[in-house]
Amino acid sequence: MLRSLKIKDFRCFQNFELQNLGRINLIVGKNNSGKTSILEFIRLQTSQENGFLLVDEIDKGLHFSVMPEMWRLIWETSKRLNIQVFATTHSDDCWKSLGAIASLENPSEDGIMIHRIEKGKSHSIAFTERQIAIAVERDIEVR
Image (tube, rainbow, N blue to C red; front, side, top):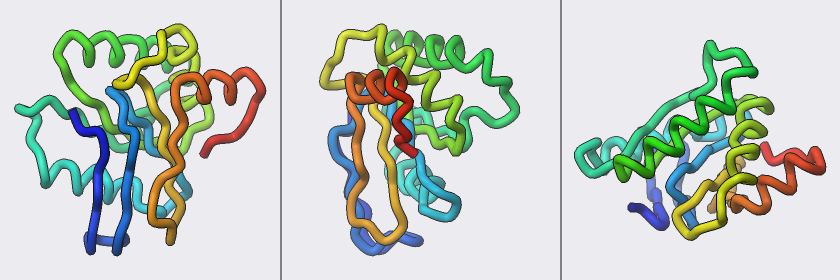
């Protein structure tokens, strides 16, 4: 399982780092901030045989009401099959649904993380399971 990721001279990134990676990592940010580039970088560096699932715009085409169940299934499947998940979204409903799952889990070093990326920044802003749950409870924006 990846614990951190360094990207150098790839697409829009000159020098970028994701730290504190969990089993599930939701990457959020504005349009054209590099979310898809991160997935493509990981895809080029690894293969699914090593236990990675990459999904761009994971919530696309889904009604917000099914997102908690989607995340629950992804969480349970990722643990059972030892798969590390990297997904992107623009959706408030999507990350808040993930937050609902995060609040039910016991925090762990390979748990659920949200990474906000911002164009021109050298690293992500990482949110732990506990921080995600607090953000949902207090209606704090993480995107």
